[in-house]
Length: 195
Image 1 (spheres, helix red, strand yellow):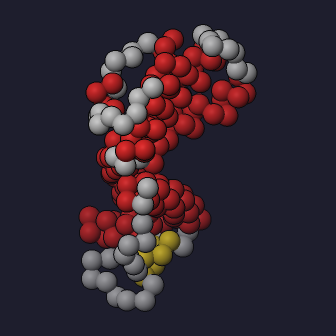
Image 2 (image 1 turned 45 degrees about the vertical axis):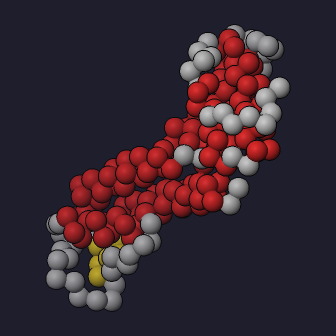
């Protein structure tokens, strides 16, 4: 039992390296999480919770692959593990800002290049204002940055509107990813500053 101890959970992050010991990892980081919460160590709580969830996922994998400590069904594994694995690497379980920032840069850059290559197919129209750098038949860097920011974050109003079917589909896809990114950012902020 770990209690009333000032200890950085990251110290133990490499102490267990076999998936067959996943239940030990879960127990260890659960104890460190409880200790950090009881001691009011919010930074250590986030680190403990991250590793606790990571070892929970490894335990799920161990239950499926090695059937230890007991077997779980294929469907239970498929419904659980892949989504949690993706959540871990993209958003750090809602606990790591660096994972979010890397994911945001990858998503934004991907959409930037997609928009660049498909710009002419979007049949973009100006909404309200005349924009000197706007050309519906060819993209330039500033127009594309504004359009991609508008589509993924709504932080700016690019004043461009896609009117073709393909343009509306890609705009919808970017809006959905933007919603997911915003939800993840809110979760990270709440975990960092409210808990």
